[in-house]
Length: 404
Image (cartoon, rainbow, N blue to C red; front, side, top):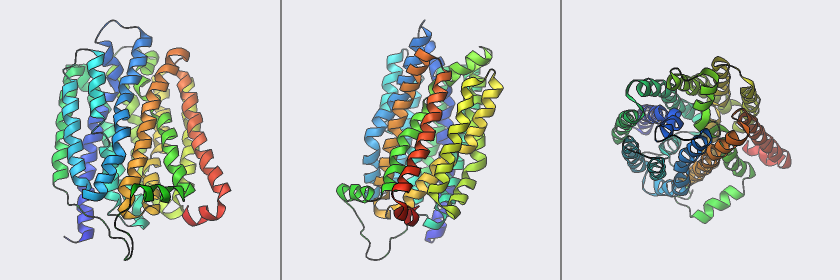
């Protein structure tokens, strides 16, 4: 196969691998707080706080390891890292089905963070074999695999949890992740070569200098943290919010609906946002998506029934669906191939930092001020991210015109 055929083959395989990984992860995320409740007779505040900590601790270790995996991927290839990541996550999640206490679950979630980042690494794997002019569309297509998994995962997880219990759902989930590892084995390592005369490797110091000389790229990386804080602040307590709105009947199933409906909106628009950004500019589309998502999130604080929440999360999914592929496509445009793994590793690390802060912050805010107050913070952070990018463009108009 020539390079183009290899790239198409890899995209198809990684679409299904991401589908299984995302579906598996979201099968269990909606009921982590409910799983914690089964370990003892705890107060609501205790469950909210530990839901945030247990949810977020995975991303502490992921934050530390992501740049390392990115640099190793640049040097030795990303396929090996992807296989290692999938097997490690599968083992960790399987063992969560046997835990007997909050501390055991907390420690396994910590261990799993070493192997987290499969989706982000797969984006780097596909990005480096994709021409710049179609990066948005291709990465948007890849994301639809993740989104489809996120759409089906919570619903299937809710049905399994209601039918077989939370512990057995973890065990079934690990099987799907093992399948992802096997799929990655069938891919072929390939990347587009830079123009002649371009360096084939960069030191970490040179990577930092490249990022520092590009204020737009630097801010796109930094706002990754704000976006993830906003997005993940509600995740671990969403099932508790559903319980407040709907009651205990089939709670895992309705929590799954609330989670997955955002994926439906995301699925409908991710590839379209990528195509639009390829045509009109990644930064322009990214700013628009951030501002719209901030406005859409706010009414979540005022809902009075489950279906109002479901509708708002659907609209949010449509708005937020393009943020990741557009952001990665912009990095693909601005970073040379030989350093893209490391730059995307820093992007992933900053995202994981937000994943750490968001659940903990959301859990504590919900515990002291109520769950609806989290929506105000989330909306403000998304709007702030858009405003920061606008400010960078205004301070650097010439640079923005050349690189936006």
